[in-house]
Amino acid sequence: MKTSDISDNMVKTLADTGNLSDRELISLLLTNEYDDELKAAADRVRRERYGDEVYIRGLIEFTNYCKNNCYYCGIRRDNKNALRYRLEKEDILECCKEGYSLGFRTFVLQGGEDPYYTDALMCEIVSSIRENFPDCAITLSIGEKTRKAYEDFYRAGANRYLLRHETASPSHYAKLHPDSMSLENRKRCLFDLKDIGYQVGSGFMVGSPFQTTENLVEDIRFLQTLMPDMIGIGPYINHKQTPFASYENGSFELTLRLISILRLIFPYALIPATTALGTIHPSGREKGLEAGANVVMPNLSPVKVRRLYELYENKICTGEEAAQCRGCLERRVASAGYRIVTSVGNVKRQQV
Ligand code: SAH
Image (tube, rainbow, N blue to C red; front, side):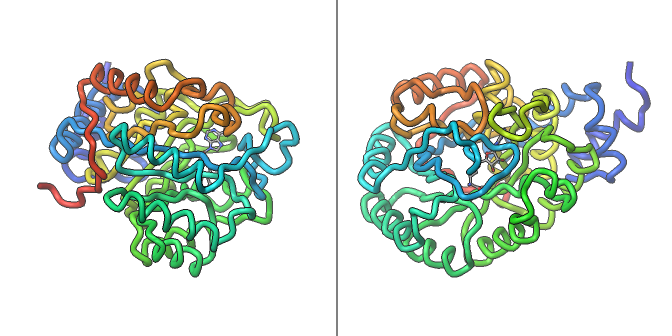
C-alpha cells in the first residue's frame, strides 16, 4: 500500500524537475516502496541520454602502497598484513596494450597514495601512455595532490580524474579519516581538477560507519555544486584488518535506490555499476545498470597482483585474465538489456 499521493508524486517530481526538497529526499531514501518506479524512471532518463550503451573503463590498480590511514580501507598504511606491490611503467603499458586490443579506450590508473610515484614519475608514465595510445582517455585516481601536480599530469596527457569526496559532512568525514586528512582539502582538489579542465568523477560510499540519511542528502547537495562528470558510489564493505572491522556492510538496496536518484538528478552523468556493488550481490552490477548506471570498470591489472588490491574483503574478479573479464562482462551487460561499446565514452552534458 502506498502511504499517500504526495509520496506517489515524489518520483514523478524528481523525474520532471531533477530535484526534491531535503525532506522528500530523506523520505525517499528511507523507504523501499517506490523502488520499482524509481528504477523505471531512471532507466527512461538514462536511455534518453545514452540509449542502451554501456561504457567500459580498464582499471589498472598499479600500487597498493598508501601513506594514508583511512579507517575503512584495507590498503591503509597501518595494515601490516597487506602484501604490498607496485607496477613499473612497462607493466602498466603492457596492461594498456592488452586492454586496447580488447576494445578499451579509457585507462584508469588507480592506486594508494604512494610516494614512490613522484609527480615527475607519474608525468612520465602518463606521457608514455599518451604517446602509445593517442586515441584513449587517461584517467588518474591517485588521491590528493597539489594543484601544480594536477596541472603537470594534465599537461602530460591525463584528461580525467576520479576522487570520491567519500562524505560531504565534515563531522562524518572526521569519523572516517585520521586528523591528517580533511574534507576541505579533498574539496579543494576536486575544484582544482575541474578548473584545470579535467573531466572529474566524485562519489561516496553508501552505508559507511556512522553515515546518516541526512549525510546522504548532504552528499547529493555537494554533488549539485560540483556537477562532476562521473559519480561513483558503492556500498561500504568491511575489511577485517581495519579499525572498522566490526561494522556492517552498506545496504545493496539503498545503493541501487541512490543510483536511480542520482540518475534523475544528474541525467548527464557517467555512473558506474561498481565492483563493490558486484561484490555484495552476485548480480550487483547488472542490477546497478538497470537502476540507472551506464559504466563498468573491469580490471586490467595483472592477475598476480589483483588479489592484493584489497580495499575490502571478497572483492570479485581477482582470478580472471582481462580477456575473460571482458567476455564475462559482455554477457552480464547484455543480460541486463544493454550493450558494451568501444569508445572513449565521453559524458553527454546535453541531450542529443
Ligand atoms: N587513493 C585513491 C583511490 C582510493 S580507492 C583516492 O584517494 O582516491 C577508491 C575508492 O574505494 C575510495 O575512494 C573509496 O570510496 C572506496 N573504498 C575504500 N575502502 C572501501 C571499503 N572498505 N568499502 C567500499 N569502498 C571502499
